[in-house]
Image (cartoon, rainbow, N blue to C red; front, side):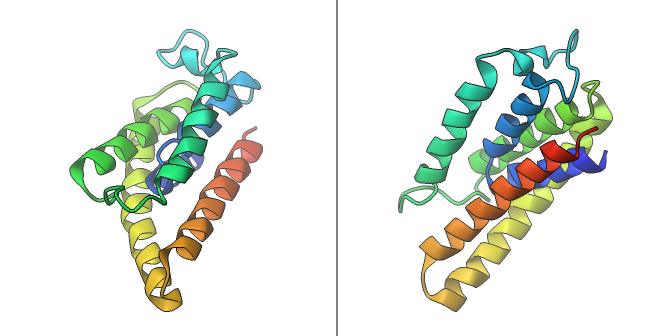
Length: 149
């Protein structure tokens, strides 16, 4: 459940990085999703598509017209991807894993927003703060996948 919570935090930082990481974990056999409603994450095409979406999000996040993550649409997307990713890492697509992912996503969304805002003020620029957030999300996602049994 700790890894499900942690991947939820990643979803709060970058909504598509978490499902991409969960899909790679499933595709590489670190979690077994056979027979679950999340089995599609283990398909050969899924991690590639989700990785492309995650990379696109890294670019879109830097655009001036991108809405804040705390707006209902962005917040809702992070909750959904946190739930799906958390359930996937719980290996049995459990409700508990989804709840842990949701809680992590809420923390990651609000905490990530606050940290980025503080870094932006401190550095008087948003881009360096956004790049730090990208690096944290990617490194955390990789560490979570590597920590799977």
